[in-house]
Image (cartoon, rainbow, N blue to C red; front, top):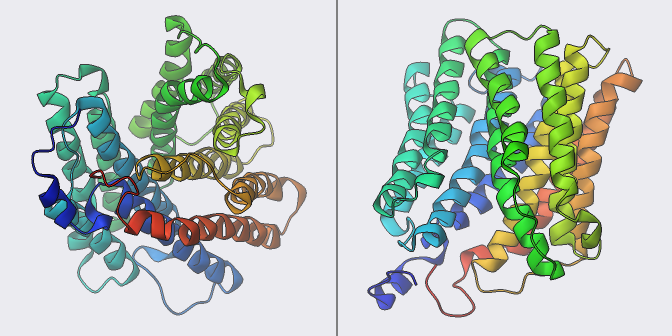
Length: 398
């Protein structure tokens, strides 16, 4: 039971700042829509006079990772730690302060009215502050199993800072840091997915949850962690056979791992099959990265976008549409529009991956991919705005 000492004081807080999932899920999703609409405008007219911090290419890669993805991860972890520890999660003014760091970073990126060094400092501080807020209840409750998320958040902070460092020193793309960040976020999703997807599935289907096999768990995570660190340390983007083998192992093991989660029983439950589909797209994208490193004609950007859209984007939508319901006291059910949103994100991923393979001028296909993402997350924003900005329906705190 949560250690809430004064329910009346909790109810005085604005609903949007009663737990971290509320502002970060809502405004992180809204930001992704704005960011992709702006990216689409640039693709349609590369001669745009207005330039965000770093230029459009750098800004797009950076902001979809550090503006959107990490906001959702932080919102999820700072909410989950309340359930894991029984200690009240970050809320009220401390949450306002953390959210403000994220928001100011986004605004300065779009409107760089101060020197780049200041923008870099403000933007980079968000993740260490979030790691501190997460670490306090983990240490207080001695939840050493969850301590791994602290170094992962700090590692993301490092890649963010190094991304800024490269930019300030003239690297207008910072592709090695972008790839490393994608792989670290994918690693976080693989770790969390292995915990929650089989748990959610067994509960909903009333079947026995498969017991984790330690060797399988390690083989699903370690190769991915190794290639992420390799990318971070070396900055090498060239194809290498050894890295290809590690990606192939990660792909095959994660396919086998998810095969034990009884995904075929979930097709009548969008909140479940969306999680399984996203995990499948992660495994396929890891396989594509392996193919790239084996020297096959797979563009690196296509494989990475399979991870960012199909893995990260769809997994995020599947998780936030579920968590937003559960943590506001609502039934775990979604309607046709959210279901269509899941499908749209899958289409977005597939189109973005195959576009450079089937066309020498894939810009129009990229627009379709962008449109599918924008549709999916606009649906989430419209449907979940009242869910996230109003008190829980059961009157409980959070």
